[in-house]
Image 1 (cartoon, helix red, strand yellow):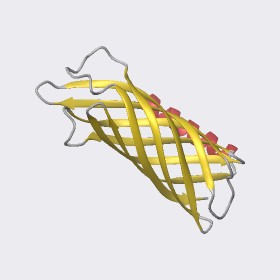
Image 2 (tube, rainbow, N blue to C red):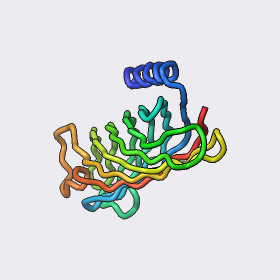
Image 3 (cartoon, rainbow, N blue to C red):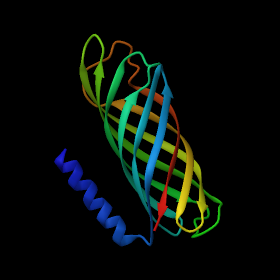
Image 4 (tube, rainbow, N blue to C red):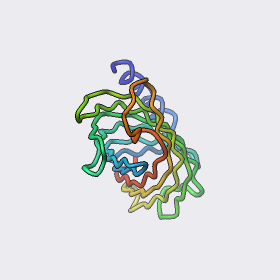
Length: 173
């Protein structure tokens, strides 16, 4: 875990130096798919120049009461977005992007187990700017959760396709 934290700090530092605009704020996502319903709350950082942006984030993940098996854990992601009209003020910042999320979950129930996952996701959304320093970005995506270890859940609900709506808000510098 220390290696992951060190890597994220290095990426954060590099992005701060290389990009002219940066954003920081909380993000909320909810995933639906194959009997699973999970929530992800976290912090995201995005650095962009012209129409390209790179983002990284940390999240706390937990399943909703509707899921068959209850889980909770942490995750981190790195992603890329291509904007159609990024600018410094006003609205109209539509984007398409891709992110890879790495999840480390603990499952609770009759049997307890731990799982590691990767979830590649394609996303699209629209960024609203309020003034020059506040943003809100609703987005929706489709991801596929892939289990990285050999332990199996009886229903296999922890793997498969996911619809992922979400929103992030925060400050632009």
